[in-house]
Image 1 (cartoon, rainbow, N blue to C red):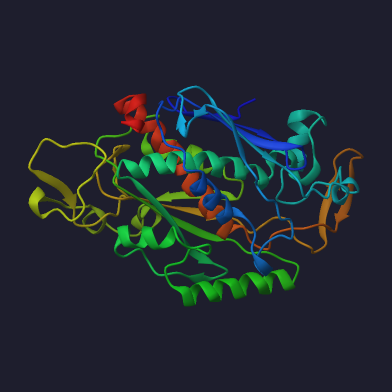
Image 2: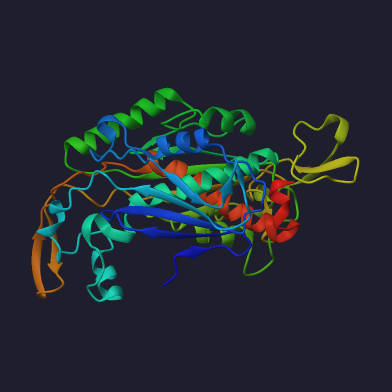
Length: 379
């Protein structure tokens, strides 16, 4: 049973969609990390459904931190977050208990847990559990931001509509972190919302691509083989229920080009002229090393090179749709047809954005504290 991620800083998730509570335990946080409760609330609000493009299930997400914090600072002992579930409609799932919803984990959960799993609303596999990830991630995002490391994600594409590319990454991250629907071009955002609403009207759903940038990461973080930056981040990112693919830099475009097209050339910038020298770790030289392009997404040999870390996540269309679908009854051993009832999102990409930011922060904090020590995050 593997519900824990991380080595130096670890997070354990618990709870089910229709259980009494969900939550997370953060262990390994340095003592003295500040807790910004308003920021935690703001991050949780970004994950909540909004209007016609979200589910009708609305949870208050009235989180409680019940251990590991004293007088507004972490104590260094396990930090436990509890979030009550208050808006369950469990009866919606009773009639379809043994029908495998296409695209969901109903059958695989049954195969793993032998029928003892809580199947209501997806149980432990539900996107509802990501609220605990976001609450825990908010604590780490704040700590990283104090070290000069910032994370931002935009909806790169949704429903066939593409947002514009990152430009001034620092400015773009600052803008994105103020938005509920995270796009760099508001007109494209309105077109995406129209596509989501059209899918909902048809009883269907859409997916898309999230693109994330991280600035302020020092060079030299990560390992060359089995704990590469890409490997650790991917491990965390694939925990987000709708994520089905991860790409770093221009990975898939590179296969159609040549090395001369995609090698990132280096150059020196004297510190007196640096546009954004990293604040995370002091550098003893009087210059900074940069690259003219960033096709490799800020990582070489599994290790950060000081440029922005850039990656994309493929987010599949929400599997819960209101069209009739062929399936099986995995208890009776019969073919069947499924017609879903209940409350479901026609798209989750806009809600998944803050979840991606959160797991990114948790993964990078784990890598950073392995390199610089556990107390580094609070220094």
